[in-house]
View 1 (cartoon, rainbow, N blue to C red):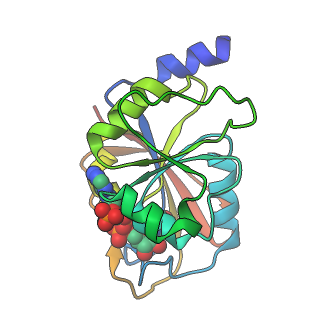
View 2 (view 1 turned 45 degrees about the vertical axis):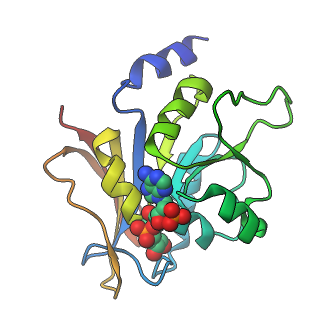
Length: 199
Ligand SMILES: NC(=O)c1ccc[n+]([C@@H]2O[C@H](COP(=O)([O-])OP(=O)(O)OC[C@H]3O[C@@H](n4cnc5c(N)ncnc54)[C@H](OP(=O)(O)O)[C@@H]3O)[C@@H](O)[C@H]2O)c1
């Protein structure tokens, strides 16, 4: 209970998210709908950080995964939830479509529910209704989602991948909004930087 209260206090109402991203030396985050490197340690870091929590992502990023990530709830933004469920059922079989009056499942086996949300307003309504005090919401990309929601992140965890790569997706500017708190090298192939929102 004490832990729950601490998490509730630490999550500012106007900044309910924490962003997590991996960025190349030339600021690339993606190419052709995929991440253009294979750095298993970064996936391990991402997994360790997000496990048991909620991952928020755009439709393009979600559809680049083969299936929902284990032991995490997914919030996927798309302007066409009905269309995606119909045309890409292999991706969205386990998803609920949010609507007015939706409520959390009472099934204890359903602790990692997945939701399709069609707007920022739906996302805010979801947060009000469903967000448990003991879970964080990690903003996991891609570019369109970082652009919109970085201002609503309390923290940014940025992996600096030591490669120059070609890409069609870059990480939006964040330096004016965030200040570096800590930098560490836990793994050989990249370093991790933790930023906090300045305000
Ligand atoms: N390096 C990293 O850490 C990292 C992390 C994540 C992703 N990536 C890369 O980033 C790239 C994808 O980025 P992206 O910008 O193309 O796509 P994205 O942000 O993953 O998804 C964009 C889509 O999300 C939906 N969306 C976004 N905001 C919405 C809103 N407010 N309301 C309703 N729907 C909304 C829209 O879907 P609809 O078109 O269906 O309406 C939009 O087209 C990929 O290359 C991926 O591999 C890299």
